[in-house]
Image 1 (cartoon, rainbow, N blue to C red):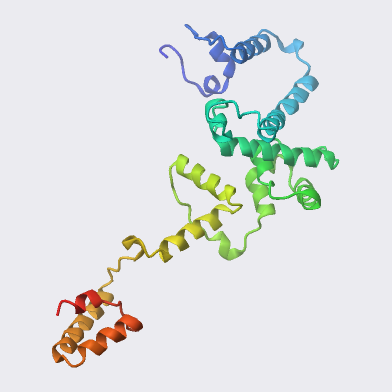
Image 2: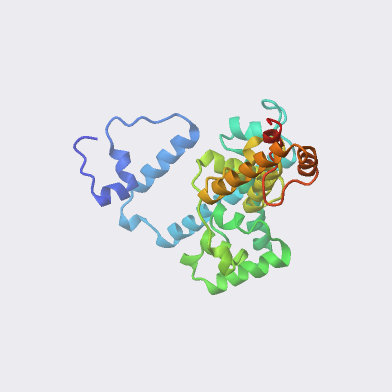
Length: 277
């Protein structure tokens, strides 16, 4: 972008893009409509604008996700997607809507939350999917009480998905001491999808995976690798004692039976080692 001075104002102002040289514009209806919307606004001067209308338009557009959620709910619950692709909702989301299934489900859940609050008499409503879906585990009176608590205790500009989550899921002091695990976005999305499909929180799902892995008898990886010097020294002493027992002969068979049946307290059962002697 030679010749353009990258000032903070330039980077902030979206209308600068209208005047770029060699603009390439898709002929898709939604793109052409957005282009016309931008040009209509840019062509007007200060006196042409009605601030009250612009404020209303802003609030109206914020609820666009609710309208999308209502449309998507009809597609999902009436199974209108069955004649597309392999007939599954996941495939329809991926290839027709260009979204992951969990994203579409979140939009539907968010719409449910907003409509329920709207019909409960609230004028202040969640303004994006994140704010709404954070409360998706609530319904009825619990949802109304929680949302009333949020909008009466927090100023509007402080109502975010994070602050809502703190109200919905208050943490104890010990729970606040957590570690953030850095994983690829697609892995994180898959974890959230699989957890939701099992009606589990992400933490519950990860605990379930960990417990299954550790209890598995089919993987050598389920056994932790111990590298501590203290353990190595104890293992060396144990092996020396074992060799002495094996050399005695009379105690070998009884030792093997005892280790097979009950193991040795605090010591790994190394029957394979005994068989070498």
